[in-house]
Length: 104
Image 1: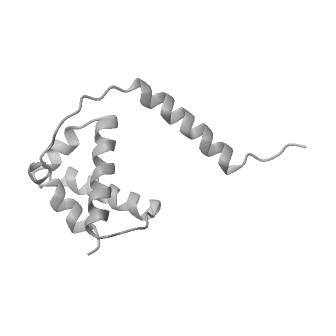
Image 2: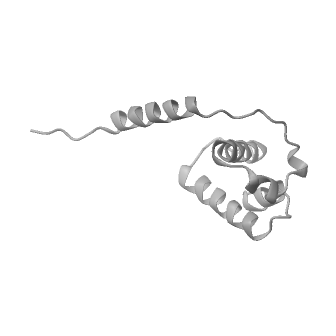
């Protein structure tokens, strides 16, 4: 009799895969002035650097709003819209885009 894979096992395997891949990525630390960062600057980031910036911006906006619950589906959809809006208007400031999308 074959037993179904539990979600816990899947999560552990994903974490191992992510940590193995993360060890191979080398990112040069930078300092960015967020109130001057345009969508074009953001879109110029690639791979892990872009992901880290998105994680930061998501947390920054949630912190400003005092949000204590993270809903992966809702946050992911907001981020997808933000990226789409940045592609449509690369001269906009990234904080303006995120501010317009996050609930008050």
